[in-house]
Amino acid sequence: MKLLDKVVIITGSSMGIGEAIAEKFLIEGAKVVLNSRSQSRVDETVKRFIDQGFKSVIGIGADVSTESGAEKLVQGAVSSFGTVNILINNAGINRIAPSYELKVDEYKRVLDTNLAGYFITSKAVGNYFKDNNGGVIINIGSIFGQVFTGGRAAYSSTKSGLKGLTNVLAVEWAPDNIRVNQVAPGYIKTNLDELDQSDGGYSDEDIIRRTPMRRYGTAEEVANATAFLASDEASYITGTVITVDGGWTAFGGWS
Image (cartoon, rainbow, N blue to C red; front, side):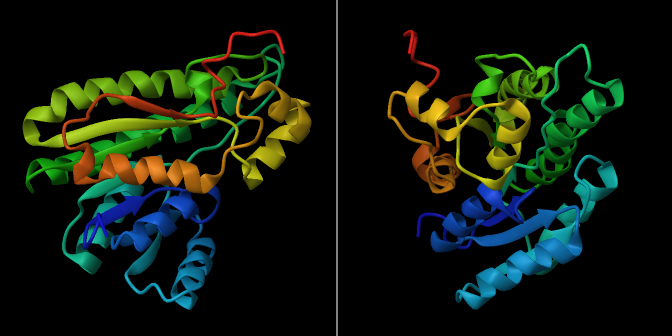
């Protein structure tokens, strides 16, 4: 129970990696604020957790690419649980397309959600942390902020930029007892990956063959790394990236 009674906001947590992080934090004793743009969707996820016996969980529908949405999350968490201790920026979208064909409005939409939204929510929660003895922010990035392939101009722009944002906030906010880190997943088997396969033209076998550990990662493995960074066990860690990719970015071979 290394996160006992800690209050955590997790954006984009109605499914996939965000939902797995929420479950891990609930198991570790945290009080969890789930989030999705859709109130009905996040309510369904809250119900699943309550049906499993978890009680300290609420859901707030809010668009975290807007200042009003971010403030709604902070106010809702404080109203329900009395404080906020941890923010997990996880909300994200993708658009895989050749750069010649990628529409500018699609590019901007990915940036608004995956990068500007992380800054907006971090700022809202960071201001609360500054006045309330600090806290922890963890940004969920991607290996595509470190290695690159075609068709991901929008996504890689956001994930590369996220490393810079993470480091700047870590340095700037450390005197206020705010730690800021990033978890960068590789290929994780989620619903989003299923959608990416149809646009990206790759198969499970392609990923397994290319990954040194010869398998996909799981959302639970990403959640484990996130919980570590959120805990007091990581009390002297800020401005860093933990890559959860089965060796993908370390591999320099031919097959």
